[in-house]
Length: 62
Image (cartoon, rainbow, N blue to C red; front, side):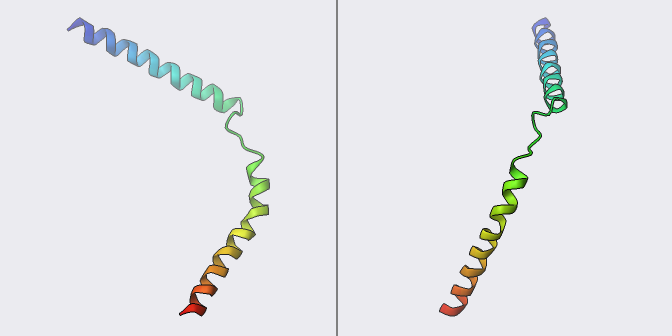
């Protein structure tokens, strides 16, 4: 029974360690993405054009 208490304590310590590492990573800016928004605005129109072309083609075929 004492093994369960030891494993529980170890798992809580590991979970707190991962949580602290996550908080440090967020505060240091590791998850900040400054590249994707600038590229997204360049390729968004092409995706919309492809969708509209596909719907026009399917409407003409019917």
